[in-house]
Length: 420
Image (cartoon, rainbow, N blue to C red):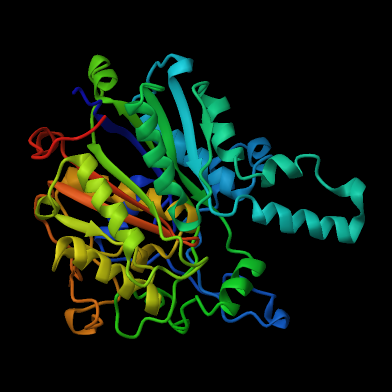
């Protein structure tokens, strides 16, 4: 049975490591850190810790016209910038508007706007609140604004699934193309939630890293002394196309989005299932859709946030599917971009396949790895062909997404049958 192949033709990003894809990728390969200290000055009276976070490498408002910046929440600004880069990278294709869709995930939406305008309301009253407050805080605004900008009329989608939101948006985009509902989808994730209330909430949940004395060393996935994640912000967007559509217009193809798996733990609102069943299911579904056996995966781009429980749970799930696999953890350099994390890490998987390199995991040597992890954690970059990469994104609520990215030649030689 014919199966529509989905390819990646455009990439865009703004992250703690860089203002675009190239600078982010170069910094990641160089082992640099995007984590900074003193992110929330002036909030000591509220009892907040010395906050470290991965703020964007450049204020996204500086990359927009002033009138645009004023009308967009910071998360929307980031998505708009990443989408523009991805669209240009794809060659600004001419697409039938009814065959073009937008899918941008977010974990929280415009929380910065919500807090700011609530302060305005308390201090100055209703008449001083911005009339754009609701469009600036609603989670679907980023996807809608991108739809408006590029004339995408095949649908506007906003997965809100915590840390897996961006990956789910990409999986959804691929599903739309395979189902024949779109030829092109602008897909990704965005987040800008480094605010006092989110930091306070995660602090009270004991989820944040306690290694704050040296910000660059705070995010420590898979390390024996890891103590929590580092909250970050940014956006990443891909242009997905059917291979037929991309070929017809002579588009450059970065990689193939060969498979996606989505599964739920149905266990706990924040903790992963002890048996790893949801994570295992998502990975196996992604492999099945890609038509690949576990041994055909070159490495795994782990969700690995740096929490004591989460990293071990994911490692156990990976070993159940792959055995002693090779893994890398980009959050060591980027921090946790929450709703955008799955999108930027899928983008990194694409670049790994395209350039034949596994990015390093910062803040780690072989001796530092928690023995309970029992995986081949890449501490130094490895320049070796990457035929297929699996990227994991696991979110609060037990929402698990795995994506498989391949080179087009490798995907053409897949060994197992697939369903449309």
